[in-house]
Image (tube, rainbow, N blue to C red; front, side):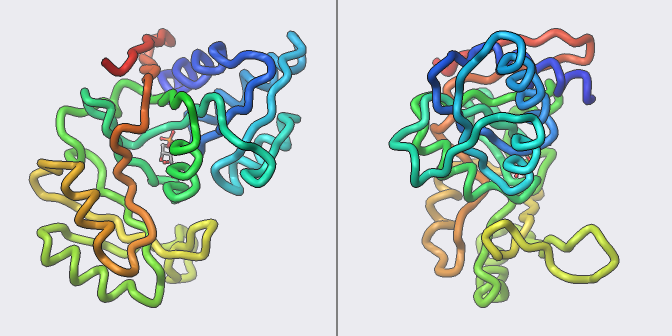
Length: 230
Ligand SMILES: O=C[C@H](O)[C@H](O)[C@H](O)COP(=O)(O)O
């Protein structure tokens, strides 16, 4: 599993060129992109500035010595490298397993090019078949949003912290996450995305439609293949 992530993450770092502003996604696959970018900065003098999509990525990037900028300091982003929880043949995705969906979507929307790095197990025929859809909600409205999503046929579950506190997980933005199970998967991701955004209290959904330009798929044998969206 981590060998496929490593292969995809490191391969994507090879596409980055000096002078670029680079959106830095979140997660265990992007970790390997950060690792390889740090090597290229050290060994080749690669000059980039990264815009991190989470506090976790900001911390890791600083540890790797990658120069960073905030969204206030950049007009646009040349290329973003990010992971996904699922991606289908139309390059539609579920993201947010690590809770970073809101900042990831903002950064992706500002990027000239978005490259998604995944292990082969993340490529699915139908979104929602292996992973529940994260939806970021304002805590005040959580119960209302929960009911609205249930009425739409989803089965939401409040994401909890992974420690013993019995407290709700909070995103970097201070919001909560409902992980929504769809028993038969998601038939029409674009329609669901529109419907979710019509619910007051929904901050963002983990459905990413039309945002990815390319995907790098890593395999367990350490190889990786690059696919461009048609
Ligand atoms: O919120 C987290 C992000 O959307 C991640 O990019 C996604 O969960 C994939 O993470 P990983 O590479 O760790 O599987």
